[in-house]
Length: 328
Image 1: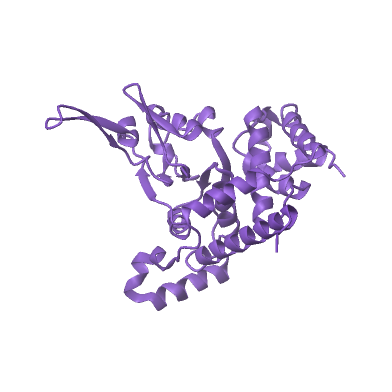
Image 2 (image 1 turned 135 degrees about the vertical axis):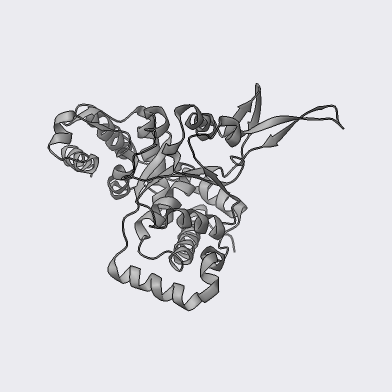
């Protein structure tokens, strides 16, 4: 029996939703109380964007990334950013091979599927800039030669919001390359208690917590989910809604810097990815409103007066969403 195109698409959507639920369940067996961060990371992965995780030490930022890589069968690579880290330490270097009598390129840790850029704000601007080409174009250039990165290449960077000693602020151009900025808060009391129970039950195995994660989806299947998400329907009124939100941010009284045109594209792509994870074949205002916070909070800048008043980027985004009419 032949399946009509619409029926097949609905079947694919349900399958994608089931896979997303399984990935989240696998990650939640290891990381307690971070459901919002897990959903945000998965949305970034499906949208083909990069994520910036912000949270105090010890809230499982690194573990979240390792679990995501394990559940999706992606090659995980970690780069520990330090003040003495050089650009070639990230991208790789050409080394002369005496046997072959020629230079050979030795890949750096950037050549992976899911890259953890740990404490990214501890490296100077020159080293941070080494990521710009990679994050935007999925390639690196070493000695004038271009090297393509893996198809699923995704950077997840972390930073500590309370310890600024020995750190360098991320340039606006680099912040704009991140699809989302996700807050990783303290877990609830119940989640923290559940974490203790799990670690206690594991005994010696607690040191390798992420090895308990089972592979849910192959890289080929993940690429197919990405492709289906990009093909989701976005009606013209919703495109206009996204544009109105972004443009309104540039005239909001409490902001000295509004969102860039790149944010317009990012918000649409993130909304399509989230809709796909929800088994929808079209985007609704709900996805746009929900994702406006993580997509915009690192792309806007408050005025000095707003900062003195104690306002936050999320407060301004809430005000922004209230000002823009929701399409029917």
